[in-house]
Length: 175
Image 1 (tube, rainbow, N blue to C red):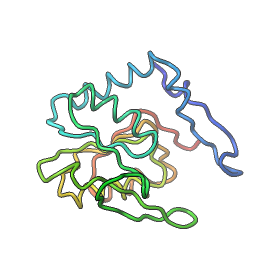
Image 2 (cartoon, rainbow, N blue to C red):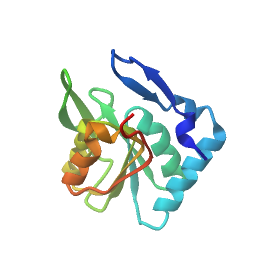
Image 3 (tube, rainbow, N blue to C red):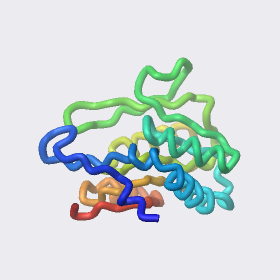
């Protein structure tokens, strides 16, 4: 299946000069969701993964589907002040300012083997912050996985420089 053909490209969003890769259109296609779910299930079914950590917000969609298929925990990595419990936090830099991700302190432990999932890897700031949260919990990161990789923005290389395995289904290089 050609997943790339199902992704909507929105020029000049959220600001001029940006080509926004909108994966929402994949969600409208049940066959595409099943195809993606099958890929992830087959990739992780024999890896002794204990949790899928999905990054807010679209990482929740794919992460929950994969966790359910594998019969393991889904752990949401949320934006600041979205969890009603004691959390571990990680601040990270954005193009203009900073943001914070949080994780429930009871979600993982040192026996946890985690795949971190999000819809897209661009500059890597959010992904690195998510990984730092997982490490603060003493858990082990098996792999980062993304639906879309934008290699020209360097996020994949930043993760690999930190010795993380990176998996993705679609790439927009030089586009």
